[in-house]
Image (cartoon, rainbow, N blue to C red; front, side, top):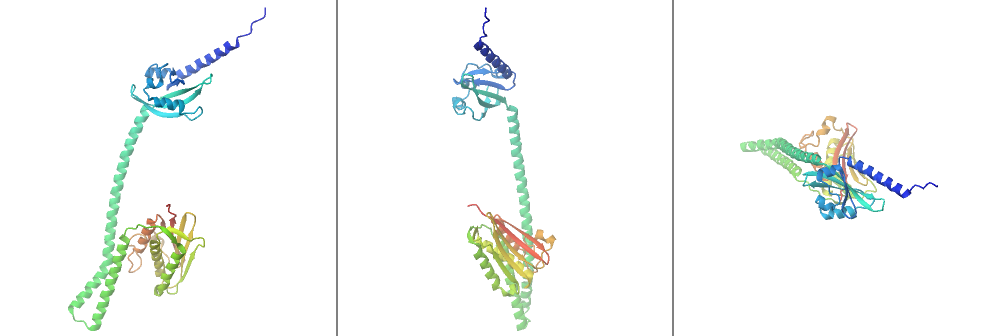
Length: 375
């Protein structure tokens, strides 16, 4: 009698059932909660960890058992593609008073249907730690803000004291000369020539005092630039013309102005930038004392404009460079020390930066770097 051939369908079914049992055993051994929901929104499987946590909900509608809004089931079943990324969200379970991270991904069943595998991970401790961390972070931010305000207040008071000392120092000399002149006139024992000299002194010192007060007010004035398309070649031509008209200041200094041929307009406040460049140029001419060279240069890239003022005068000592933009700092007799401070205020208001390099008796360069504003 011939041997019967093995029943292949039965054997294949046994292999599928064995593999499914093995998979269930793996899922039941996991500490995270796992459940599978079919296309009918019912729970087909819950692993041991989840059943011990929430009870057995196999056969029940997913949203009814877990207390979800039915729209979440629609999101899991239809809002996620078969091969799309996992859906992740957080869920707080009223029954256990715990917070879980819920991850959902598709499962392609052997019969061609698509189920959804859900993984619940207890993140209660993590959320508590995150809450405490956020609380500590907010407290730290509040302390930092308080400390910053305290430091800012201290800096303001220090600056106010420095400004007050600077003003007092600057006006003391002309006021003293004026008071002396008035006392001499009160005596009335001078001749016509002496009175003329005293009146000249009073006029000169009054103008000097007026100039110092004007410079201080100019420094104290808020800087609110109004950037607009400004012709850089025209701006430099205007500065050249102003400098050339002051023959006493210019002397025999050779003035050279260079603007990139490709540079036409740049968005900036032309009046304020002219003031800054004139301040730098006048300082350079005063240091040259009528001899040497002064170079003004403008060059640009796609996102930056560089404005340079160079001279080959005596230069600036290295230990002084860090102080020259400080208000009321001046090494020039009769100077208020506000010119460079005003330049820095103008450049800062344009969100740019100003810097200086100096090689004594060779070259001193002030560089204004302006970014192209975004309109």
